[in-house]
Length: 305
Length: 305
Image (cartoon, rainbow over all chains, first blue to last red; front, side, top):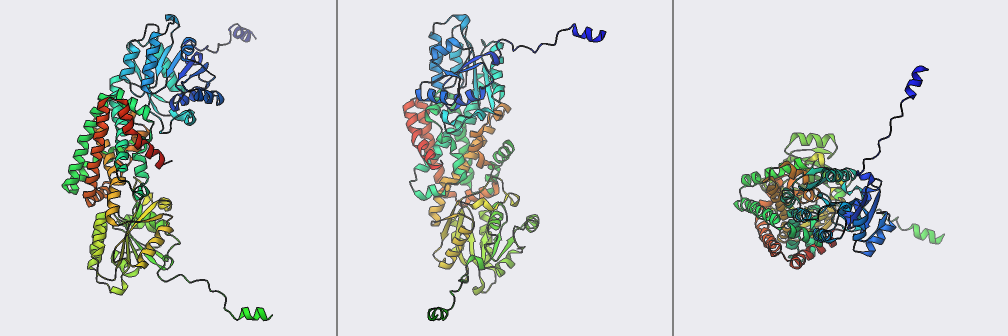
C-alpha cells in the first residue's frame, strides 16, 4: 500500500508533444500538382497538419479537390503567407520563376516559410535560393523517381517509396529546415542522400539526362526508317531503351537547358564510349569486342538484380 | 425411312488425319537449349510428336531431362538423322558452325530434315542455308523476344507469346517448309512476319542491335565516374535504358559482328541524330529543343501504350 501510494505521487509519463516545426505541425503548400507534386501530396497525407495545393491549371486544382489530393487549394501568394513549408514541384523553369516571385513578395521576415523544391537540376535553383530575402529558409531537393506518364491523374502515393531523394542544403539552410526536409523524405518512404548542387548535377547528367537524350536520339533514328515492318519488330529491348523518350518535353527541355554544361560534358564522354564500341565492331575481332562489352555487362548485372 | 437409308448409304465424314509433314507429326530437334531454345522446346510441348534436345553442355542436357524440357537428348548427328525438323537455336556463330556441319554430313538426300533457325541476324545464315546440299529444306527465322538473363534455367513457355516472329524464306525453301515454320510460329503463340534477310538485318540493326550498343555505351560512360553516390542516384530511367547492356556478351558479339555493315550504318545515323540533339541543347533555345524532341516523344507514346 505504501509502495502504491509512493508510485502514485509521480505523474504519468507524458506522451511527448510533437516539437514545434516538425512535419506533423506544419501546413505544407505543394506548388505544382503534376505527377511529382500530386504524388508527393498523396504521400504526405496524415504526415502534416494541412496540405495546400497550388497550380496554374483550374482543371488540375478541381481534380485535386475532387480526389482529396490536398485539403484545400489556394493562390501562390496566399499559400506563401499561410503555410510553414513550401514545396516547389513544377518543371525547373517554373521553380525558378516562383523563386523570383518569392524574392519580390512583401511578407514580414518572421513569417517566411521553409522552401523545399523537387526540381531535377540543382545548380540554378540553389543559386536562386541563395539570393532569396532573409527569413526564407531554403533547401534544394531531387527525388530520383518519376514515370513517363505525367499529370495529376497518374499521381500515386507510392511513387517515392524506396527511392533515393537527394537533398542539397545551402550555406544559409538552417538545421531546422534540413531536418524538416529529411522528415519529408522519410514520410514519403524515400532514402535521403545529401549532395552539393554541382555534384548532384554532374551525376544527374550521367544517370538521368544523358539516358533521356540517348533514348530520344534512338527514337529519331528509328523514325528515319519509315516502314511499318520496323515497328512490328520492335520488342521489349526497344521499348525499354526508348522509354524515357516518351517523357514530357516541357519538363525535359527545362532539365537539359538548366543543366546544359553537365549534360554536354556527359554527351561528350558518351560519344567517346560510342566511338570505342564502333571501333571494336569495325575491327571484326570478337575478343576485342567482348572485352569492350564485358565491364558494362558485369556492372549492369550487379547493379539491378 | 427411305431418307434415313439414303443417308446411311454415305460414310460418316472422316475426322481429317493430320497431313503428313504438319507439326503434330514431326519429330523436332532443338539445337541449343539456352533461354531461346529452352523456351521454344517448352512452348512446343504437345504440339509435335517428339522434342529432341541437343546441346554442347552436359549440365544443360541433364537439366533438360530432369525438367522435361524435351522428351530425349541426343548428339547433333543423331538428331539430324532421326528428326523431321531441325531448329538451330544457338548464338549466330554457333548456327553458322552447325550449318557448316550439316553441309558435310553423309546423309541420304531423301532423309534430310527441314532446317529452321532462330538466330538474331539473317544475311549470313541465309547465305549458308542457300549453300546446303540438296534435300535439306531450310528457312530462316528470328523471334523478336528475349530476356537479359540467359540460360535454360530462365526458359519459359510464354516467352514467345504475342511476339513478332520473323521468317526469312529462301528461294529454295519449299511451301511445305514455310508452312511448317509458320505452324511453329503459331504453336508458340507468336505472330509471323515474312521479310527477306537483308531487310530483316537493316531493321534489326535499328530496333535491336543499336539499342544494345547504346545501352552498353551508357554503362561504359557511367563507369567512367567511379562514385558510389552516382549508383545510389540510378533510378528506373537508368535501369530501363541500360537493361540490354546486361545481355549475354557471347550472343551479342556474334550479332554485332554478323550484322556489322547494318549495325555500323545504324550507328552512323544515330550519331547524326545525337549531334542534332547536342546542337539543340548547345543553342540554349527552348523552342528549337522542344521541336527536336517532339516527334520522338509522340511516336514513342503512340508505339507502346
